[in-house]
Image (cartoon, rainbow, N blue to C red; front, top):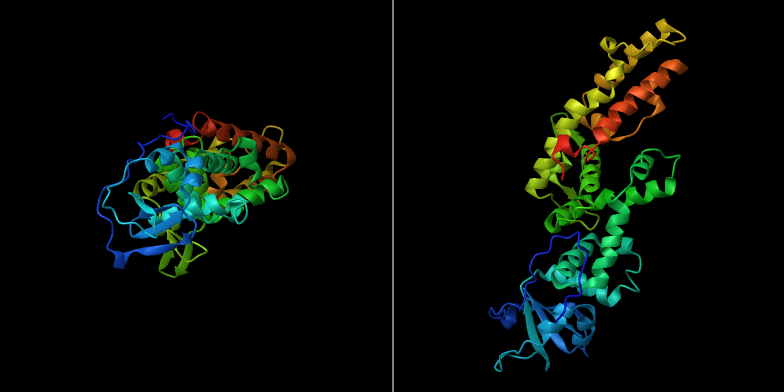
Length: 348
């Protein structure tokens, strides 16, 4: 049997076949999934959930599954409504997601944005494991579109007036899903999207940090986030640690480098061509208070990840604004060099 192949950027684990030979769940404990076709030819049992589906349809989607279905079953194995039972060592919720997409992908989930994030993750996980190529390729293409961003598209997400459509699409995609995407991307080692996924996670989850009471705040990196369907998404511990270290580094080191031109000791402002030295000195002092007196880490992260904004030079003359812009961009370029923040933050 030849492999169908798949995205080479995923670090593949060995497919889990043949299916587990552990005993089936007691009949009284078995749950019948809503994915149950009266004309189905085979029953898949995953944990204590059974799915009655069509062997021919699944075989068309995966040569691995096609091979599994040809494995001889014990003669004394019980049947369900005349169908053989094949047991898989996965999570029932993952098979529900994959099968829902296979059977309803062209109708209910024609647009992947309508696909529940748990189903999206399930397709990536099982699509990778069993080489369900068409479904896997489509989800991978969607991931790359949203996360393998160029520098110009990344910068555009911070400016409402520029590329508004791209900005909205990106925001809608990662606002609720970033935790799940980070978890599955690390699990499957999808290297092409990990750097941007970490940056988006850092930005989104840090800005979501909010004050609950005078003495308590909620940090979504640590506490996770509630999905729209009421379930709770939680980052894997290793990802939490990476994001927390990166957040501290950006706030403590990268942010001061970007705004080093505000400091009196650098002699950047007033510049040599300043049009009003006294006014620009006063504006520089006000900018210093604005950029360094606010100790909210979310503010520091947002300004560190964003490109230059003219509000950073509010009150400066035209020439000093240009000098500040040059200094900021030079620092930004140095930080974006190499692995785009990766060397200093521990990102992949």
